[in-house]
Length: 364
Image (tube, rainbow, N blue to C red):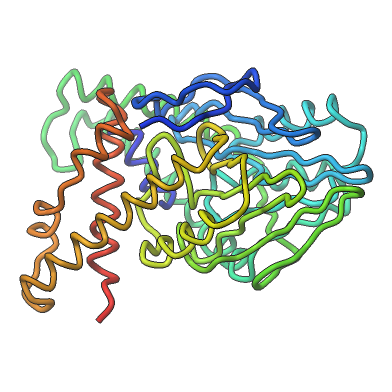
């Protein structure tokens, strides 16, 4: 459960997936939501995807995409840990000596932007791009988020010192062990941020912008609210590569918060894009739209169930818990999570978030 609480703190059948060796393989249900190894794939000539290992606190790190043109390089999302960003930059310099001129933040969440300062230091004059609302969201949430994280670490230390839970009851041996393990991971993550000074996007776009890297065009688009209020999507028209940010995440979608009614519309727009390589914000790269379409099916189905239940019960008398119990996602649980316990717990947390946001944001 620690993993899922972290996911909430920060926010927030088979298709073909691209494995680390850049060869297609079936993405079997139950592929783990945890990632313990870093892997790299070249998904098109000069287009690379880095899948990061989870942080020591088990927090997942967003995927990083590197696009190399004849003249410049653009990086999509800088990751969560500064050490991961430094590792990625060292890798980029093995691929090319061309400068990284542009860094795109697909949205404001820490697991996609905390590497910004590392890139800014490594590449003077770097342009960091975000949708119009993203810089303000990063500035408004990032520092307070880190402060809450430090406070939680202090509270965990206090629990161990007192030997009592937050409710005053004595810690069991199992609880003490779990807190010690979680605390060690969080302290390791905090160590990475001892000298952290946020760097936010310095160039914004409203609906679309285009970057010419030299014989390679990158389109940046905004399809409306979704996973966040300012999700940037990138598209390489010649290569037919689509980079979705967390509008799409695998193997289990991230629905802990956001704007699900709008996200459905955004995914519908993405499904219409002429793409044969799809890079999600987390997880494997896909060589067809099966996973995207099934994520869309899931959201549409849950939306319809929530709306139906609220209307049947009456908008003024419907209760979230009753609606949540009535929503049936068993087929999707098996499809997206398989039989893995951690995946299933993550899926349930995600579905709880989806039902809640659909319930709270239901059109009046």
